Image (cartoon, rainbow, N blue to C red):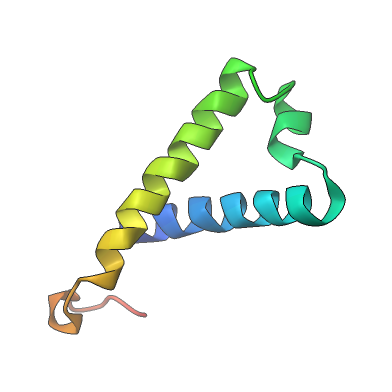
Length: 72
């Protein structure tokens, strides 16, 4: 499902950003978008958070819910 892939990509971006904050003390998204409080940064952070919530649903889906042609 396309939403699953988009959500997973956003969650990966968020994880890499948090990893860079934890290891290097550097927030990549804030740097690229003009600071943590910049509107673009806040939109990206919000989308990553929503994607994380969407990915929680992946934990509770049955494997039989996959559609024909979908890959894991």
